Length: 94
Length: 500
Image 1: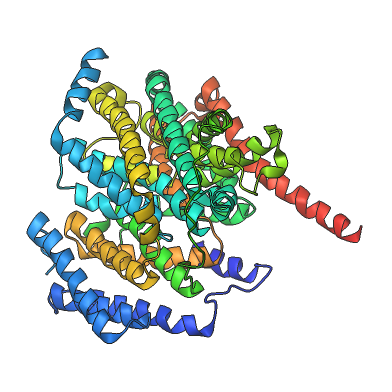
Image 2 (image 1 turned 180 degrees about the vertical axis):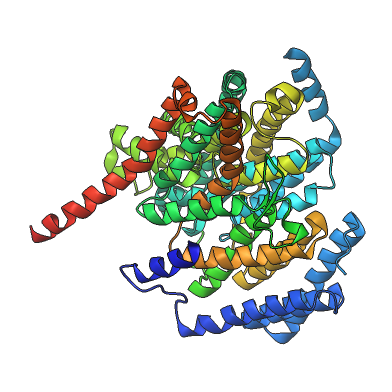
């Protein structure tokens, strides 16, 4: 039912769906979705600290944050999350 | 009742509870003051963290977030003309105008006092009305609960604004998702595709994190939203609070009453309440022309209503198990995680917890007001944190939060899929509220209808002959078809208006 409903909803709209504001926004959006898919596929193969730091850096780079700042903030955030969840709550992400 | 109240009061004096409540208020104010982050998102992201805490401490943190986020949303609304949460949209209309006139301090103080007024009035309503409503609900049987569930679900049309059919579609999607898992009566697996992880049904919290966390980030990136730092922050002149105490109090009372009522209506949130309260306050004001130009009455009504919604929504959620607004929908998930089923039985089996929640809400309101008076200016500066850092933090917290709940990668995939669905639905302008309603009310409607049919030996007529069921079903029909009829009338009148 939903498979039929969604195309009908898109086709029946008075104006076309604007998925992205400009073409410039399409690149980071698609890249983010692909990065997240890759992150989940690599869950059992790459350790949490490495894959999460990489994801954070990719996310910041997609938003045009400079390399140095992206690496610093990405690694710091990952470490903070790891400390909070693994050391604080004993959640094992690997 | 007094012994339970005393027990709750004693619990509340524990330093750990006060500590978690204060931490929750601080986090909530952070989420509220940062445009793009909402109270719902904050609660959804923090629910997995509270899994490791005792129920009262976990609830203290979550209720702190709820009570802290809504008033804090008014700070960027007043200073930057950017609503921190959807509930503070109406606060921008007069708040920012006051700020532009150099009366930012006055506007911030009105925000704090009107929010406190609204939250305390909402808590008072919860304390006075919840037990009678729950005792009435305890007398209801499965047939009445089925009728109540259908009535709650029918409101999906009303809360969908002009997009009635899209709202109905979203509600149907929620109902469809609610059928996944073991059959409530026969325990036969349905739509699980052989996956044992789906036997318990679609996990509610990861879906909420995906819809309101990741989905919001994807939508913001696609829209190229950069809402930060567009305006100036003017500090205030001499506070004129004393002069406007009377009008502000009157508008706060009006806004609070509207807020409590709108909050008690399932799925109608603070944004709707604040807009209605602002409009009603304008209609009743002798100085209508001031509204939108920096009216203290308009700001007070909007802020009070947005905050009074909390008490109304919590009343509906706790007494009937139906979410009053989006944050209370996520709170249902949090209570279920802690082994508490919201609904009338909560008032029989967990009376001390009910009073603990009431007192926690009151204390959270007072803590929020104290922090608000001291910390509005630093929070306003925080509102200028660049969007990419916020987005990254939300994405990482969505992943870790969804996983930490059950240590399950399936939950993370579920969150990801829900995030993508949330993005697509936002782009199609499909409201998400009805989806949440369908997901929560689906099991309630199904299990109670089937129980009622078992009790009546399959006879439908005895179910519909019960007076309260009929009342609920007639109200449901009115709630569902009223907006549809209004929409058709509007479409019918439009060509005539255009030709004129």
